[in-house]
Length: 224
Image (cartoon, rainbow, N blue to C red; front, side):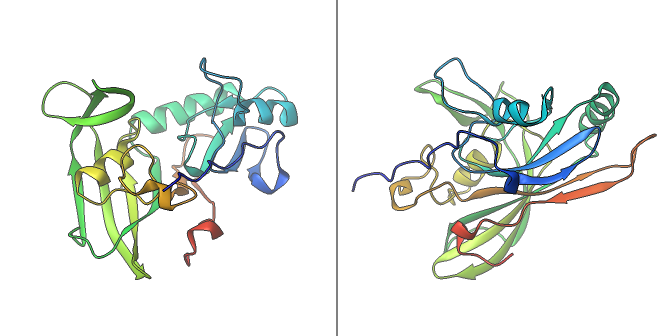
């Protein structure tokens, strides 16, 4: 079958993406198909450039894959960068992703995946599980509801490696629906069914604990 076209990248910042905004922090619901930041491989639009056109000087504090949607933090002060840097390094930031996988499957009801990740020697775009070397990668997960041959999985990464959630689920035999790199049936779907649903920031000296949520996209055809 002919692969579906990727979503067209927007050319300007959409106010509907805005989740929260204050003097230090802008929280955005990034759409699927939009790069988080510019790359050396092309001139496609990216979230950071569009946000700077809209808000002025901002820093992209962390990134999502182009085809992953959901919560992204943009900062605009040194104080919050120091606070977030310390919180991320101390693993005090809690991240909750939602993915859809095929059902039935053999995934346990819950668990923790501890598999090191390294580059795929056959494809520079991909990552693979490696026994030695690479980077440590840890993901907690819980199975969710089942609907029409699909199952939700709630993912709580302890580390933030490139393609971590995608590779870990594929390694378990349950690749994410629509994953063009790690699923053999990706062409059946218009997008990668992976969404950064919520991020919770810890209390700091000058910052309260805060949670920011991006609703599960309607394209998932899934209740929250």
